[in-house]
Amino acid sequence: MRSLLRDRRLNFAALALLLTMCVWADGAKADGAIAGTYDAQGVNLGGNRYSGVVEIVKDGQTYQVLWLIEGQAIRGFGVATDKNLAVAYTDGVVLYERASEDIWCGIWTSSKGHILGRESLKRQGSKGTVNCDLVQAMWSTSSTDR
Figure 1 (cartoon, helix red, strand yellow):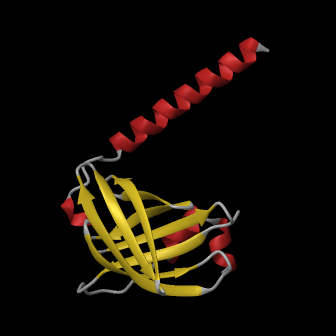
Figure 2: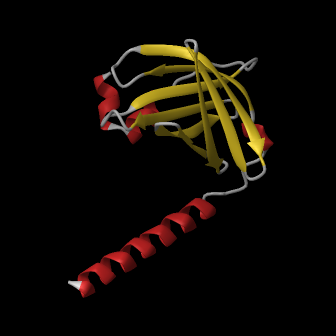
């Protein structure tokens, strides 16, 4: 039994090391270009659409995030690479992928749901349209159900 537990710990350690290497290999140099004010559009865990504003502030090697969604303030903190931004908040986690210089496409969940919500961020004042369907569909098999 102890051998089995030790093997699981080693496998977990190896997996953690592999994931860390993948993140660094993907370009961990997240610059200040991520920071800014964004318009958010999303679909919550119940399938209802929402909108709001998101402020992302660089804080050393991490980011502070404030969502103002329909009168509710939600605070989080995260880490980023050139292509991804992962943010933990009070009751859940969000994973964004950069679709363009000013657009981020994300999936999220909370401890209350066992399904994914979707969210897109578009930097305020930027031009272009947001289309996160392809990115979010690759991440979530449930995105086509919404």
